[in-house]
Image (cartoon, rainbow, N blue to C red; front, side, top):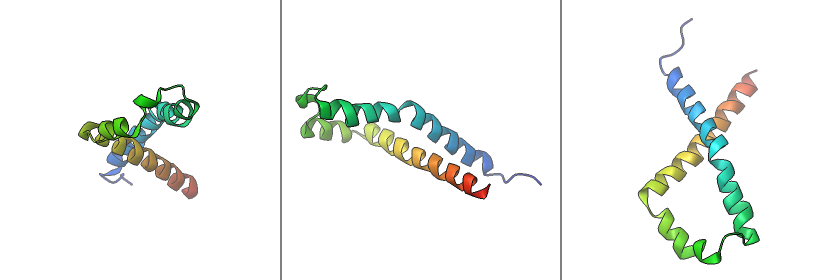
Length: 85
């Protein structure tokens, strides 16, 4: 039986989510979960006004949206195929 025509698209999203989760997510965890609370990063560079200015840029919004949504899609796809087995 032939695979549905949309299957390569879903596998593309799966692989993109895995790549983003493997490369960029550890950096975010280290930066926001370890370095900022321990004070390794100066308070003026991680203050509310600075982060708000950074995250109001459209490219930063697109980056965070793709990082979060594709990582969640990757996890959901894995769980689906694990449950099917």
